[in-house]
Image 1 (cartoon, rainbow, N blue to C red):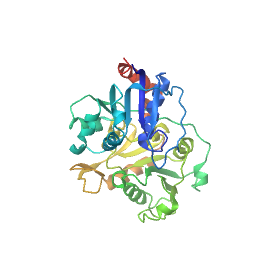
Image 2: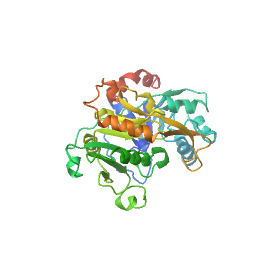
Image 3: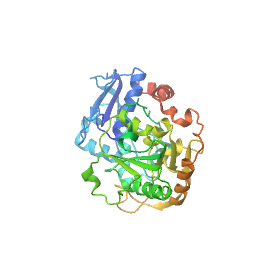
Image 4: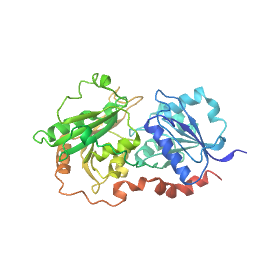
Length: 358
C-alpha cells in the first residue's frame, strides 16, 4: 500500500508561476510535516530556482497533484502515462485565465479525480465544463526578506519620487498582461510630474529582447529591470516602489498583486477576474473596465470567450489618486495580503489535506 503523502508534479525549479504554485504548496506541507515527493518537469529554465524542503521524500504516495495547465496535463498523459496509472487519487491544480474553459481541454479535467484552483473565477470556468469536485484553494504567497539592494539608487530614481511598478513576463500573453496600458496610463499621469517614475520588471528578458518590442519607450522616467533576480532582490524592487499598477485584461490569480499588498504598496488594478477575490475598495484603487471579445490569437488555445478592457481614463484618475494620498492607506492584516501567509493557509486547509491522507 502506498505511503500517506503527496506526489507533486510540475516545474519545481523553474521560475514560472506554475512552478511557484508547486513550491508554495510544498511549503504548506513542510509547515504541516506532511511528506511529499517531487517530479520536476523539464523547461528551458529548469534548476534556476533553488529549493530546500525538510519533508521531501523518495517514496511514491497514494495521491498525486499536477501543477500545470490543463492542456499540458493532456500532453503529459500522452508521453508519460505511468504518472496517471500509479496513484490512487489524482488532483489537478489547474490554472485558466478566461471566463470560459475550452471544451477541447475538458478531457484534462477527466484525467484527474478532483480539480483545485486558486480563485472562484477559475473555479467557475472549470465547473461550467465538468461537474466534479472543484475546490478554490488559494496557495501561499511567500514574502521574502530583503537582500539589502537600494534599487532607487541603482536605477537613479530620486528619493522623493513617487514610483509605480509593474512586473510581467515578456514570453507570457502580453495581450492579457497588458503592459501597453500600464505605459500609456503612466505617460498620461506623469506628463507634468517630473517626480513620478515607472519601474518595469520584465522576466525572461534581456536588452536584446527588449529591442524587439518597439512599444517599450525610451523615456527618462521609465526604468527597466531585465536581469534575473532572487526572491530577496525582488522584495527590494517592491520596497523601491510606492504603487503597483496592473491593468490586466484577465488574471487567474494575480500573485504579484498579493506581493505588492504584502510590501505595503498602494495597488491600482483592473476590477476583474481572479484578483477580485482579494482586492477591494479598502486595499486598492479599483479601475473600471468594459467587456471585450477575445480575438483569435489574443490568447493561446482560446475558443470563444471574453475578458476586460480597462479604462485608461479611469486608470489615470486612480493612479493620480494613489500619487496624492496624504498618508498610507490604513490596512488590516487581511487587506495587506497576510491571509496568504504559509501558516495561515496551512492551518485553514489542514483538515482538507488530511482527508486525502486517510
